Image (cartoon, rainbow, N blue to C red; front, side, top):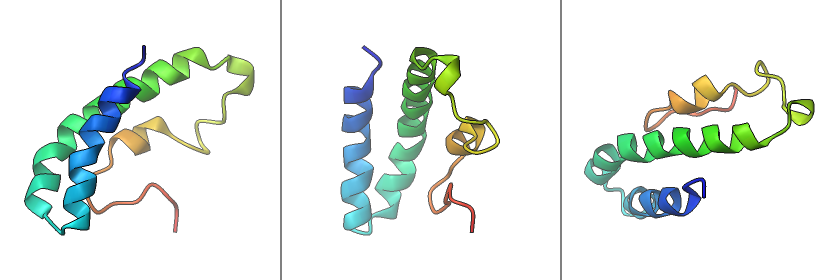
Length: 76
């Protein structure tokens, strides 16, 4: 298992908090969720054959894992 279920559970509270405009809960839970996200994405990347990996410049995992509340991973 790669931990996706646990990540889903960790993401549920901040998602509900965002809907309720509860910034304190988002800030409290963000780091744990992003740590698990990094673990899960790392596990997924280990399962993807090199031949189908997308270019690191197109979608950098360091950019994803460095996100903080209120930031976007999409270029503007």
